[in-house]
Image (cartoon, rainbow, N blue to C red; front, side, top):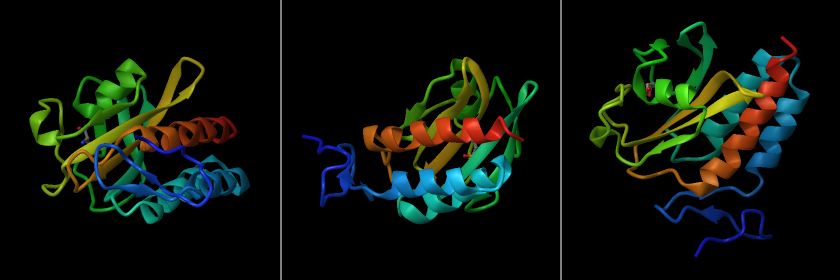
Length: 170
Ligand code: SME
């Protein structure tokens, strides 16, 4: 059974694996995004706090849509060879095209997967939307199999919505 996300005195354990998300992380990321001087700074703050805040997140980055390509913006983790991803490629391309969050429990079993690091086992991609338009996405890899579930979606989708608001200012 899943526990309520903001239950006092608890973290949130993903049902899928042994990953705990600090219950205050979303509010701390929200505050940092709110206080950042502009959209670019807000993206950097969000990447840094997410990478720092969840040990299972081994690579955290933001891709921005530029025409028909996703262009890598701020990231933390090993350098990725995929600094530009055409919309038709990768899990990143699929998430942007469908405008839906995608969770992949085992990247090596997904033919869409573009490898960033051989250690990566699972991935979540959360589109950053303004209305029906995709502005970019939050992409997170984990070295743990099936690291992502509803608690990550519950954390990251509101963060993406806040980033979309700040990006509108730039
Ligand atoms: N794995 C992604 C590519 C980006 S790297 O993970 C940083 C994909 O399949 O689209």
